Image (cartoon, rainbow, N blue to C red; front, side, top):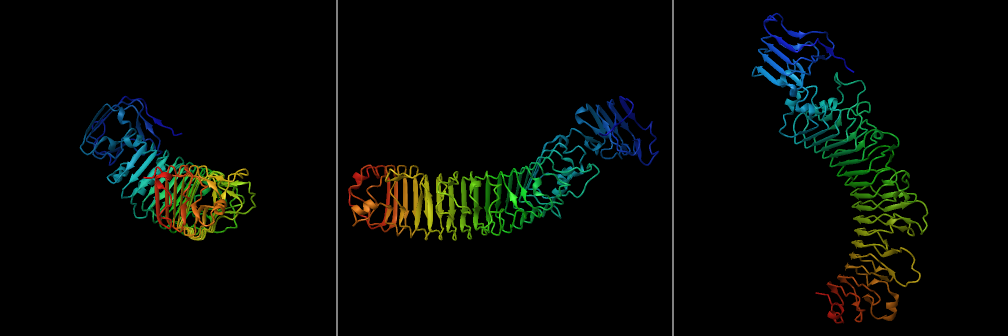
Length: 598
């Protein structure tokens, strides 16, 4: 705790030419109590009158003068007075001020404890801000209460101001910088310099929770980011976008110190090749739940060691063509390595797009770690061969990926299988399946609880296997209870959509186009026996009471349906589009069988 030098009680100071002979000293200080920077407090002084002291430069020599009770100030003809030469006051305490000099004002004479920069908690710098003037008139109390700093469209020496904030704004929680140009050598935070007010082993950014750097011209974020200088233990959100000269985010700062980090978003940084340049062992991110890496053409790795993500919920990797791996067993080229069993228990969303080195999405012993995965999207990954690589034997009764409800696989030219275990029961509760441009895939597993199924542009697909919810021994038909929308297009080798007899009580939309090998929607051996000479695309045993829309385009279909089709089938049909079909002239009374058709 600092001590104060208390002068004897005085209600009024009145100093003029009669008390000090003008010109007696080249430099005049009114108080000289030693060289130590000890605050001098005039606790009871209410009036200060200084007049005709032409050589007066400051009230005290090398000391801080405080006027906690000052109410009246008179200053006249003291032309050499220094900036802040009279000490520290509260402007709100003053009742009367008379300064007879057009070039001197109150903020010049005193450091004001209650001016806006001393009390301000949020500061926004834009293109019109005179930041240089703020720096030149900086007082010791300025920005000491600052919690939020934002800058946008500012060109100048912003890094100088940020380095000042590092040393005095110990309450800073949020820093957002967008579209700003820095100085000659653009390093955002210069921690190499410590002034006389920096205490011993004091570290910077102890309370910082959010750091966002958007489209800012910088080479380094930190001049030095060693853990002995900065403390990012409270950092929760880190978002860097469009910083094209940046090669890494952290140089020396250890990733294990970021134990509160929740969101890590890095995008559109052309030269960035890593997040942590430091080489180290296994590291855990206990709080990280969201990761996004997007449009990083030179990005190779996150970290040299192994990473654990026990709280990770969402991963998005988009257009990172040379990324080597995310972590062991997850999004890496080596299919033999498996995830560690300590991560991904909370993971619910994965999105990979144009991740060219991706061979396997997840390699695991049993896939039991991914018990909360709800959405998986993989698009335009040219080397992907398998989605789930399971190393142990799995019994058919074991349900894997029980929570997965949406699966999108698009433009994966080398994908040969969803999983290497054909007999396991994958994603039993999947609701949306979208598969497109997977030209090496010949077999597809489809669960019985689907709502939306969209499969297209996959020339090698020959067979769809239905993953039954349960074995229905007493029934000769299985039911898709929830299936509402089916679209099958450009599947030249698929001979039948549903390789058994099924009921579709909820189906509303059916679109099938350019599936030249498909003769029937379902495989109905009974219908073929009864009518061996004619193949009906919709067998008479098939019921679709809710179907409202049918599109059958460019299909080699002999007959669409039987003339004595049950009256309850297609009774809700409102839209029928049939093109390039052999059975163009339907051999039945359309108004009778399709009463709602417009």
